[in-house]
Picture 1 (cartoon, rainbow, N blue to C red):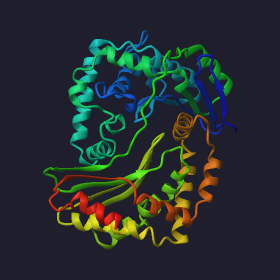
Picture 2 (spheres, rainbow, N blue to C red):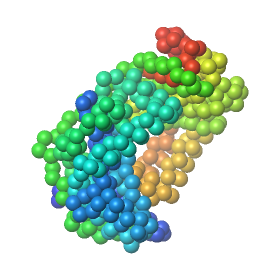
Picture 3 (cartoon, rainbow, N blue to C red):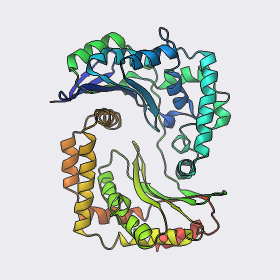
Picture 4 (cartoon, rainbow, N blue to C red):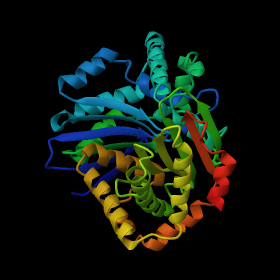
Amino acid sequence: MTIEFSTLPCGIRVVTDPMPTVETVSLGIWVGAGSRHETETNNGVAHFLEHMAFKGTKKRSALKIAEEIEAVGGYLNAYTSKEVTAYYARVLKNDTPLALDILADIFQNSIFDPTELDREREVILQEIGQCHDTPDDVIHDHFQEISYPNQSLGRPILGPSRLIKTMSRETLIDFMKDHYDPAQVVLVASGNVNHQHMVEWASSLLDLKPLKAKQIVAPATFIGGDFREKKDLEQLHFLMGLEGPSATDDVHYHGMLFSTIFGGGMASRLFQEVREKRGLAYSIYSFLTTYSDTGMLGIYAGTSEKDSKTLVDVIVDELHKMTAHITNEEVLRAKAQMKASLLMGLESSSSRARRIAHTLLSFGYYISTEEIIQKIDQLTVDHAYAFARDILSKPLSLAALGPIKNVPEFDSVERRLRG
């Protein structure tokens, strides 16, 4: 079955991805506005707004929203990322009109009741507290902050407690007015769904007004730096990263290949050398994070205080080895992993809808699975080498949380890396 595209009169794009053999539909409204679109004074507003969408509309109370979706056995949720906010549902195919009606309602007609706002404020403060009590979560926020200092991309999605405590109803409404533009909104439905029906339903339910002034997001600049905090923990949580390509740069496929070989699974070099051969860490992996105009290669590990220096040295040594010796067998194995991950995701209607939405918002057009497979098939050892040699010249970020006494100094790590 073919993916179909339409644009509503208001400018919202509607996409359906038919899966006629399933009995469910995953659908959602994605908007290209996340924490990156915030300022220093309203950091956390995109996430707060996402929470408040479920707390009552002009025709449904918070309880009514929950009761209606659960009365048909459906699921309703949302998330906020750096560049996107999503409101989504999963229901049986016959309940698709109801799910869309609820999604359109919470997306356009939330009333942001002051009582509910104060109640949800406390929930978000609890969420922030829980994050701070989870070191392998909070270390990523510190890592992001030093990589993109004094930039919205470096600020936490949840926002700081001091701003959440005083964030007003008007701040939420103003953020919507400034960033919820129909040209940056996509409605995607994957599953047992008819395109024409979805367009007709959406036309009657969605009528977002275009923004008079388009908000320009400042380009991100990966600066890099050093963060370390001594904390009474059993393990050191360590993150090391280097500037990488953006999502729209085809070099990010080279980065995916590199990261998969380097730290993307049990057969990866980091897992084998750090955990299997040396026993230096239980958790060790690398990852490639991409945004619309920037990205990063990151390496995370959790280790003991006594092993921390050896661990950092080994990571740097393994990075250098990637510039000198990569086998064709490693490349073939990594490509198989990349393709399997992509194709396995096609079995989930939720994953399919999310991928379509993010592709449209990042690129402005849809990139098919076949196109991605073709790009993966074209990857070679030379692409991995080129990425390895280029990445070592990029700005460096280090973040360490826990027993940090034996973590090498930033300058020492940088010298070893550039050597």
